Length: 278
Image (cartoon, rainbow, N blue to C red; front, side, top):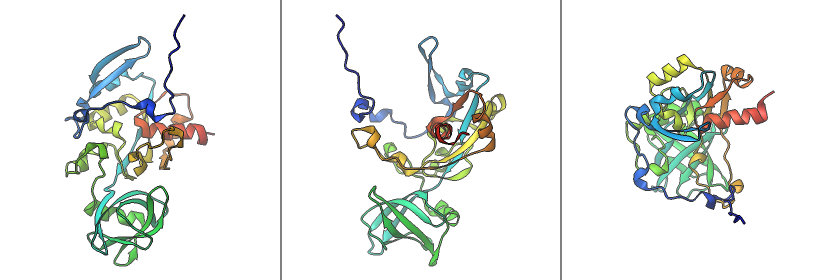
C-alpha cells in the first residue's frame, strides 16, 4: 500500500520557506554582465546544464520572438528633512497624474507635512493611505512641479533605489550598473533585473538574429514589498503603468512563439493576453 504524501499548499507563503545564505546574494554585477552563470533546464530530456549568460541565444528556438522591457530606473530615493529638522527618506512609487505622486516615506508624517530636499525642492503630503504610501505634491520656488519637470531634479539630487536585500548604499557606478543597456523610458523605481545581464554586444547580436520587440513596464516600489500575508492571494498588489509598442502588439497578436525577458515583460504580456487582446 502506497503512503500518501502531503503536498505543500502553493497558496501559503510557508510553503516557500528556504534558507538563502547571505554570502550567496550578489551585491555587485558580474563583469562583463553576460559572464553571469546560467542554469538551463531541458524539458525534453529532463536534464540540467550549467553555462553562462553569453550562451543564451544557443538555447533559444530560431522561430522565437523576444520581448524586452525598456523601462529606465529613476533616482527615486530622496533624503531630506522635515521643517522640524528631523531626517526623513522618501521613495517615489509612481505618478498618479501630472502633478500628484504616490510615495513611501520613512518617518512619521501627516497631511500638510513638508519635506525639504536640496536645490529648493520640497514635497507636501496631501493624503495618507492605509497601505503606508502617501500622495504628495513636489514644489520648487513655490511652483508645483509636473512629473516630467521633477525628473531632471531628482536625477541631480536623488539616489538609485537599490533592492533592500543588497544591504548597501548606492554608489556612482550603480547609475550604470543598475540599468539595462536598452533602457529608454524613465519611470521605474527598480530595474527589470533579468535584463541587467545583457551587454550591448549580446543584445545587438540577439536582436540581429531573432525577431524582437519592446514593452515598457515602469516597475513600482511594490516590488520591494515583502509578502506578509500567510495566504498569498491576500497580499495587496500595487498597480504599475505599462505600454506595448506596435511592433510588440503585432507579435502578440500572431502565433509566433514568445520569450519574455524577465518577469516584468512577462506580466505585461500576460495581462494583455488576458485582458487586452482583441
